[in-house]
Each structure stands twice: as structure tokens, then as C-alpha cells.
Length: 399
Image (cartoon, rainbow, N blue to C red):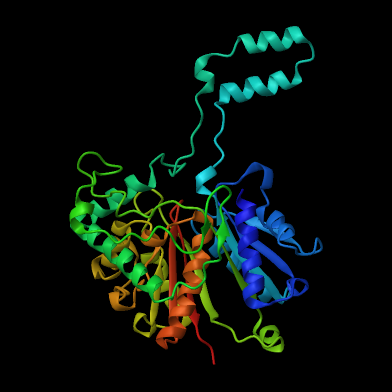
């Protein structure tokens, strides 16, 4: 269940940081597809990880930026003086998502539960028809538009003239860089997890550098037969959980901790979920840079969520277009496109997977580790989400 994964992430964080459980003032977790038995997964995971029952915990949801929301919620609580130490994270169990009965079956079952006599129960059971058993499967689709995210990504790629070849090349880049980083021991944040009935997972297992020839054989996954988005150039759904330790600087230094990074500023932005569903980073990046008093050239490390290769390439084109900035964003000039030699150089969601509620924390800690490894000062994290929403954040290494 999701709380098992989240518990393992929390226990891993405690082991690696040696932070005492009783020092943690609050726990916030993000998730998207909630398990009804553990709707407040933060609380259940915290109790399972051995935190005191006196430590409050709550769960947030904001689609693919749920753990981003968890982190910034924690930051807000610290800034408001409510807490000194917060653990934030996210979790998603895509391999066992809740699947509902049809509405007809749910109604019948609820009525059956209230039936008092055997005759009433048999009468209700006799009314059940075969179509009642058809399940309601969850879909990665917009509620407001009924369009799947993959279909939207295909339209976005077409609108910006992103070819199938370009998307496959970018996806191959992601897997190749992730494999290189993994082999070099750079992806050091994975906590071993024993999957019930299976082996222990000790590293990211979705990294599969292929070839352009092999990728080219795949058929379109969403817009058929002429679409350009395939399984190979889309992020894959996977199970995962994350956890990150957030403190006020004063508290961290008093406890003898050296911060991995400081949060300089962040923004949330929302756009049209129909035609700009995945363009959030283009809109949010200039805003967060302005808030932080920086320009694109000041950023040493970029970590963008790779929902689809076409989504990444469309954003890079839009960010580098004066015409788009002037006609769609009301800005005088473009913000500019991040240089690829600073962009997702340890792979991304295309190669590492995308457990919806957990990805944000991975982006942030990867940016922090890259800054340290590469001697950089500023990092920019961006992630789009369902509903046309996005979170951008700027990290810095501090004094």
C-alpha cells in the first residue's frame, strides 16, 4: 500500500540524516491517487515510521506537483514561525491503484447494505446485470476537458513543430544520461525496498538506453495512426516515494547540519488546461527568476520534469521565442531556453519514471546534488501538472 512506500522513504531519511524523530515538528506528504483506507497517507506513514503520535501530519494533492506543494507548505510553516523542522515528501503506488465498481453496482451494494430482510436482499441481487460489473478504470485525463495528457502532449508537439525524430532523440538522451549517472554512483538517494513476493529494489529500474532504430518501431500511443508521442518518448508510470528534510537555517546550524541547498524563491502558475496544459514552465520561469532577482544566465543547474519529450522540447522553443512571449505572455521579450549542457544532465522522468506524488522532491534533491557536484550556485526546478498548473523554484548553495 502507499503508506508502506512512504514509511520506507521516511525511515530512509531518518537513517541518512540521523535526525531525531522528536525534533520533527510536522510532516506533509503529497499524493494523487488516494487509497481510501489511508486517505491521510502522511499520518499513516509517519506512525508506521515510528514518529510520535503527537507529531501532526497531513496530505496534500496537486497532481504531478503534489510533493512540490508539500515542500512549499512546509517552508511556509517554518516562515510563519509555526515550525522549525518539517519533513515533506510524496508517494504514488501506480501498480495497485483503486479501481471502482460502476455507479450502478455501487448504488446496489449500498442499498443492499441497508436491506434488513433476506427477501429484500435477494430482490436487490436479482436486479444486478452483467454491465454492472464493468469497472471504472482511472485515466490520466483532464476532468475539465476529458482529454488524456498524452493526447494533449501530441497536440502540443504538433503545434510547435516537434518531430517524432526530435522526441525520440531527446528521450534517448534522458536514458543515456541517467545510465551514465547511475553507473557513476550519482543517483545516491535510492533507499532499498523489499517488494512483497519479489526481490529488493536497490536502484532505479526503468533506465533502458535503447537505439533510435528500436524506438522508431513503436507505434503512436495516443493520436493514431499519425501521432508522434509513443511509449518510448513519454515518462512511464511507476511506484515511488520521496522524503526531504526542511529546517530553518538557525535550527539546522544549531543542530550541526550543513544544508544541502537553500530555497531562494518559488512560484505557482496556472494556465488554460486545454491548449497550455503542459506549457507551465514557460510561464513560470521568468516569474520565479524575477522574484529571485536573477536571470537565466545565472542558473547553473536546471531540473525540469520530463512528462513527455515533446513537452520539454515545446517549452524550450516557447521560452526561446520573442513572438510567444509577446503574443501569449504579455512580455516584451523571451526569457531564453536553458542550455542543454546544464539541463537534466543526470536523466529525468523519461528515464527514471514518474510516480506522480513523489517526483517534485526528486527534482529538488537532484538539483541540490548537482549544484554541489558541479560547483554551481543556483539551480532552477520546474514541473508542470494536470490542470495546467506548474511550480518553479530557485535553489542556491548559500554562504
